[in-house]
Length: 245
Image (cartoon, rainbow, N blue to C red; front, top):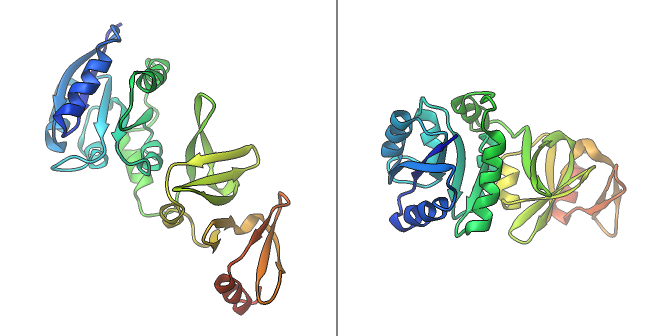
């Protein structure tokens, strides 16, 4: 079976590079390209490809907005120069995301996921997944990498998020998972009544906090169910004490 693909990217060099890389896979044929959101929507609905490689940022409207407008429902691989878009990509049900610049090996891994998904029904329309992800409410799950797989993790089962350089790490009972988004941006997508940023490097799930203990003069430490002790900033310690903690 020949699989058809459309490439949507406003950079001609990026389109040509991806087209060349895809040319090494004889089971896949590129049937169309587009350099803007409106042209990409028209190409996808007209050509009805099996898969669409979609740049997140395009003129006219973004790759995310593109998913609102298309009637045809291809499998989607997002391409982006910004790793923080990974969370949105997986929330929308994308097969994978490719962080620019990427090479043949990384693309091959994404195509393996495409081949595994082919023949499976799309469980919900992209527009529905988009509405759920961008409705303005907090995230209910994250998609994270575990070995060679991408797995969903319910957010309410995450004990805390720790800063890790420019990214965050989700601490779960099954392990630690890197989330390719900053702690500040992640905080904006979490339920503020459940997840509280107690320190510049930590967001804790209040349902996983056993107790807040005094540590030093005027400072608290959060004792977690998994035994971890998370330092609370002085400012947040004062706020918690004012709330009667």
